[in-house]
Amino acid sequence: MVEEKPVAAFTLSLIGLALQAVGAMFFAYAMLYGWGSGFWGSGMMMGPWMMMGGPWFGGALWSPLSSIFAVAVIAFGVLGLFWMTASELSRVRTGSTLVLVVSVIAFPTMFGFMIGSLLMFVGGILGLTWQPMTARVVRVS
Image 1 (cartoon, rainbow, N blue to C red):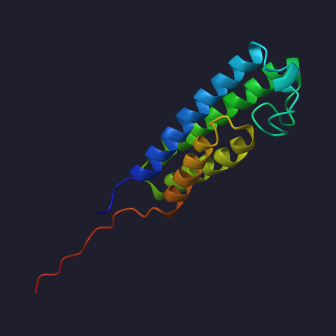
Image 2 (image 1 turned 135 degrees about the vertical axis):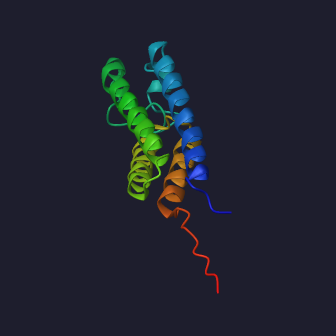
């Protein structure tokens, strides 16, 4: 069955983006209430780039920098999702590329608990490989 729109790509990307948003809220809550200092924030147990690390991590500086980063990731993900629902192939490709780029950018932050980024990555690839339904020509002889 051929779809008029990339439904599977959109659904996977939407679930992944929802996980990104939940993960970003969890991360912001954790930083606001104390995971940014002491044992958890030191990276002793989780290591660099894992949930509490990254180049934008700076204790009290997390709030403005990473909040802007999280909002940008989620906003571009929503924009990509909207473009994936278009009927024009070029819009679908652009939206899928945007979702793919956002998933790769957000992967090291673990905003979506890794599974969110993986779902968005798979959704972006499915959107890029999706082909619209073509009109069938029926010849009567």
